[in-house]
Structures are given as C-alpha cells and as structure tokens.
Length: 139
Image (cartoon, rainbow, N blue to C red; front, side):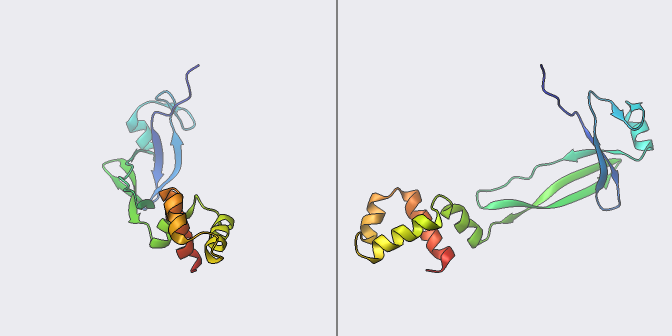
C-alpha cells in the first residue's frame, strides 16, 4: 500500500498570510466540488502555496513565518535567528540531568575527585554538559 501524500497546498490570502488552507489529493482539490484547473481554484479564492525551508546553521533556529503573495502564488518561509547563549547551554547541558550535575559537584567539592580528574575521565560531551549546566544554574 502506498502512503498517502499531498501534491499541493492551497490557501486563501488574508492580506497578510495564508488562511483556510487545503491540501489537494491526486491533483484534485475539493471545494465543494472537485476542481482540477488552477484558474478555477484561483477563481474560488485559493492560491497555490510555495513553501521554502530556510537553511539553518548549527547554532540557529527557525523563527517567524514570512508570508508573501504575488502573481496568484502564496509563498511561505521562515526567518532564522541565532540561538542565545542560554539556549546553546541548554542544548549542551541536556545530556546531564540536574541531579547528576549535583552529584558530580558534590564529588568535586568534597574532594573525592578533583575537577582535573573528572575532566580527564569523563567523555568530552559530559564535561561540556557539566560546565553548561553550571552556567545555567549560576554556580
């Protein structure tokens, strides 16, 4: 069995964004009757949507939607913003829970293990996670 797939997305234009969006199936848009031609679809107030996924760098995230309308076509993309230092630290700290952070902090503070020993024996991503968690908690 072939998975269901949509061929195109059609929306009405509100003046600032696409609304009342519909997906066509097998090249037929039901609106309340099957419509196959773009001119008939446009006459009912629906326009084909072109979606452009932005290129996102390692320390960036997709942000606000950007809609456009020109030549009977609606476009949709997103702005991209840089992650904040806190967001980057949260991503880096994710592998180490707060509980584990406090266990390691206690081991280091009580002298059972030195910070140098912990850094030498833990994988680099755990050291990075510990330091990021420390920054996030303000310790």
